[in-house]
Length: 253
Image (cartoon, rainbow, N blue to C red; front, side, top):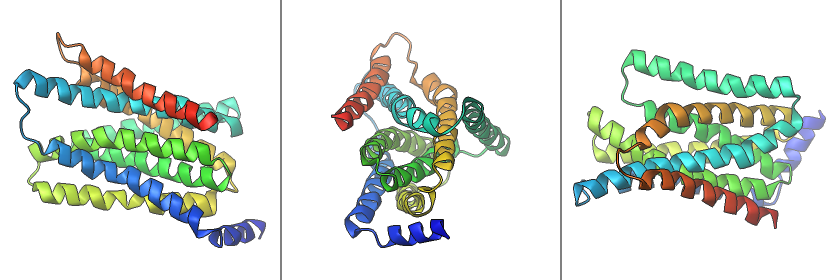
């Protein structure tokens, strides 16, 4: 009963707070179709610049993902769990993403980047909503920024993957990404209304997402960022992490 009462109180919370959750998660999600629109540019001349740019975008996304794990998800997640449970949740996320990777490979689907993008967007949106409900709006805002930073290159990469290996038109792919963005507000409001009274569950979701993200970075993102005899892509990863670090420092002041 107390949990239901608290949920009812949050449902009558100021509309400004609810609208902030919707706005932040929606803006973070809309970075996916925005990345797809950028990927519509067929060719950047000269050819070496296109390769450098594409690999730098991939690396930037990896850096942003790592900053989300290192600065938000893991620090907030380990505070409510004992070491054994934290390790199990983190490992469970990695195993879940590995299983998803294997299934997609066996099905020979061209949507591995798309699935990975959605698989970390939803847990992060849940965590964002719960952070607002628990009064940690600073962490919620930072998480929203990091989600947008990682969704932009993920949308870029997923569009290239689907466009090259599926029969979908560009319009359908971008429309699909825009539709996926609506999952963010739904998950964020769910986290706000129902998960705030379960900090251990929220912590588990954060660590689960962290394990999955770390798996994705080293399985999919880092290998694609490598470009022989070019040195800009690794700096893209550094810049992606720096943006997350600066955002974290700003929320602490």
